[in-house]
Length: 355
Image 1: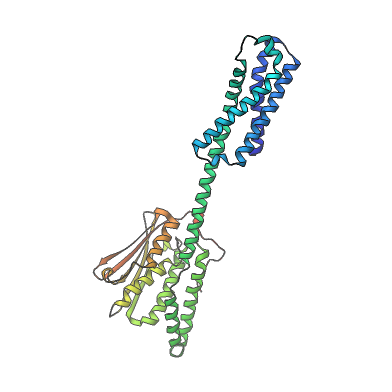
Image 2 (image 1 turned 180 degrees about the vertical axis):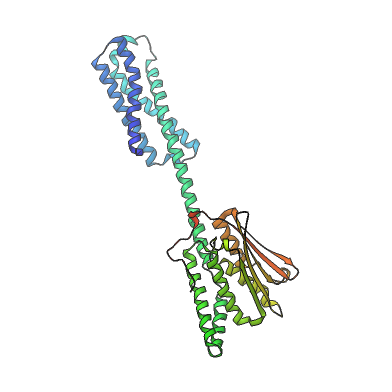
């Protein structure tokens, strides 16, 4: 049943039962009188109209969004006003009853007034509380949706970042290979196109398979190896059970790039990059080891901050990221990622398989 239908059902049924509850004992005691019966029906119709007008007012001026003290004042004022209207309307309609039964009661008007105020207070309070709770719930929902939208927009920006210096260096390396080793140059172009394609698709996907992310990392390392030659050594090892685990796109590439920029490139004899992944306690644990020393580098750059922010946006407190000095000459970047629910899986039609 729709809200509108429910509202009218409760309006008609509620006021009919209330007024009939007062009319029926009177009819049983004094017998059926057409005038009194019609008065009861008129009361039902009139009070439904009055309370519906109140509903229109509270919706038009959005009373439910007001602070509670101001809302309470309006509710009390509405009850007193509507009660007064109903009491004034009933005075002439019940003139005969008043003359015959209530002649010796000078405060009969205030009795009428108090009775109608009591009845109207129950209805107005119930409706206002319901509307206030509903408005608060909708406001909270809109706030959550706005926050999620902002976080998603922020995540798209973070996902789509690729260091332009890497692209420039890779193109220079490929240009040098064109005459020296054409086949190697062709392979390098394919690897660079794979990385660029994944970078462009990153803003349309929340997560990718770990195996796809590792292929991007391998392409990246192969291109860097063209530049550094024997000065760069790397290895990639993963648990076969983890290859379909969902991870943020281009995240590992960012961490590996950080390791080369702040570690391997600053070592006289070059260095190494080791990427490992395993599953423990229902968490995917990825470690990236690289030559270097945190104390002598500015490794807390934008890329690492972006990594921490992306993990927070996507997983909340379920994921962690840290970078630390594992040995005097070895830096470790560690990411712990929980299993994703279906709601956070890939968005978009492209699966982004590397060629």
